[in-house]
Length: 307
Ligand SMILES: Nc1nc2c(ncn2[C@@H]2O[C@H](COP(=O)(O)OP(=O)(O)OP(=O)(O)O)[C@@H](O)[C@H]2O)c(=O)[nH]1
Ligand SMILES: [Mg+2]
View 1 (spheres, rainbow, N blue to C red):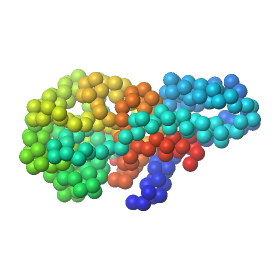
View 2 (view 1 turned 135 degrees about the vertical axis):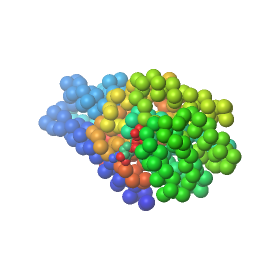
View 3 (view 1 turned 135 degrees about the horizontal axis):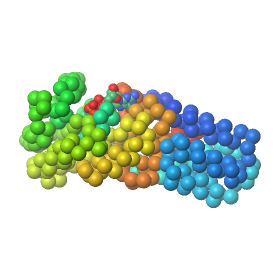
View 4 (view 1 turned 180 degrees about the vertical axis):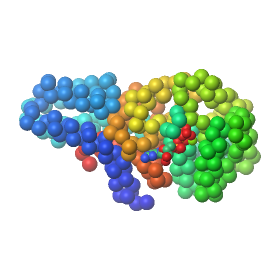
């Protein structure tokens, strides 16, 4: 797809957030001058927009530091906000990539139920195939029969091998087998899908740790990446998920999905500010091209309704 096509899908995907936040900023400045009260209200708006308390206060301060006068236009404020948000996002905006090496890269995908793990794998797998890499999948969500079938359907569509085990089989056992075989096959990438697990369910969390221990038995450097898939519609709850999964599974990067279904896209900024973990991609819809590399500038200008 052309870059303008991708850009318009991205803008459309973020529209709920940008309409809300951008619209509210515009309304705020209607018939009002820039003074301390207006700045307080702006800070509140940013907090309501899920940008996070600390980041909102940082952004308020950045505007206050500019020594604007009462005549400063709303457009200027939005430009400053976008530039400050871009500064926060820039260090973590790191597109998903597979290093050039002969070693099979094991990519473990984790997250709570329904966050978009399996569909994200299919989208990333397609991107890797488009780059000429050989890709295999492991359906280590042995919890739900439908989950294995879902990955198998993707495997057939993309014409790539999918490792499976019977329902209720040991997920770690399957992970061991899949990693061993993918390495024997000299596949470039193996994506390991896992069952959705609520971050407060100890049993499932310890199963995840077992999967990781077993993978390390085959290759001590694996998993080479552990990606946490977060559903943007959960807003600030995403923060708990990052803390717990990071502690339990050593998350190396984040993917935020379903931005098209929410006005809470500001959560991406609060996650970037707080955890400093790379954010690789954003999901703005259900199609393959809707999983887009995270670009700091594009996100910042769209968020405040400048584009
Ligand atoms: N609108 C929209 N839907 C998405 C996005 N990403 C995933 N979905 C949808 O979310 C639903 C759940 O996605 P899955 O990939 O099955 O989620 P999962 O994390 O694997 O779910 P479990 O295996 O049950 O934990 C599916 O209907 C996807 O099509 C997105 O960026 N936007
Ligand atoms: Mg799944």
